[in-house]
Length: 319
Picture 1 (cartoon, rainbow, N blue to C red):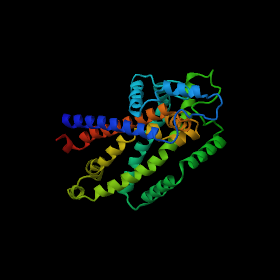
Picture 2 (cartoon, rainbow, N blue to C red):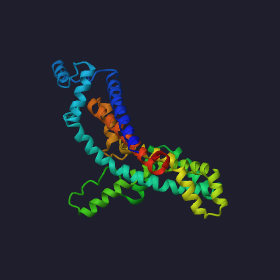
Picture 3 (tube, helix red, strand yellow):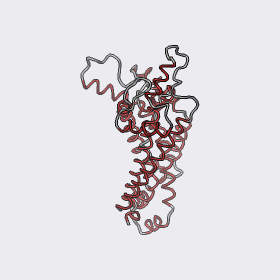
Picture 4 (cartoon, rainbow, N blue to C red):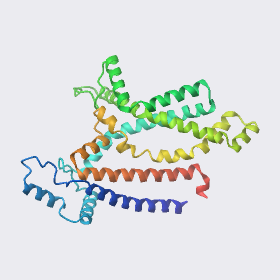
């Protein structure tokens, strides 16, 4: 088991190294140069351009730029070209803003998808299964931004409460309880919106996987032995149906970066996805590269978590 974990860690470190090289090259092979931030600005003189290039090592070969960039990144010296603020500080602030959306949306998705999918598989072809299938495909078909505007219009016109941003403007003198409830209220709509599509898709996967496992010989044998239906479904079938979802669960971590760009933009939520989108528009290379690097770390961390969960779910890997 320890050798399996050790090999997994070494493979992911090597993968991260190559991902950092490829992402750095792709960013710098894009049309234009970083020094062409605003060529129409008369204040952006050739002397300022040259000083900009020297300060950020843009006049050196790519491999030297790569070394300088990751050296400054790991020492906390990398700054944004847009506002000259430390990159890691900006990303950490946006990360803390995106984290509640991610946690609440993930909890809603995974706690609701499995009961819906399992019940649909058990009562295949029934009224519940047909209804769940209809609403799942309906939620999958509706674009996220359209559904978001419908929710905003309904909530604002029906309850007359603000839903944009992280908090209501003008609550400076409010009690801590009111401020906490206001933050929870602003968190509710974007979290529910982010979970709807995931519930619709994941519940379909759960249903199909359960139907596949329910048709295996060992499940039919368990039924023939007279075991209770709950034990057959949840002990024999569900445990073996969980293997694909172990991988899926490990890959939800990158959702902290890019899974909420549309939601954060619509609800004016200052999160990671919105920051990455604004950095791309502003050609803020340090932010783009750092966000890409963090995304790669989250993907590899997620796959490592999947490896550890496989040790728990599948005893063949432990052996």
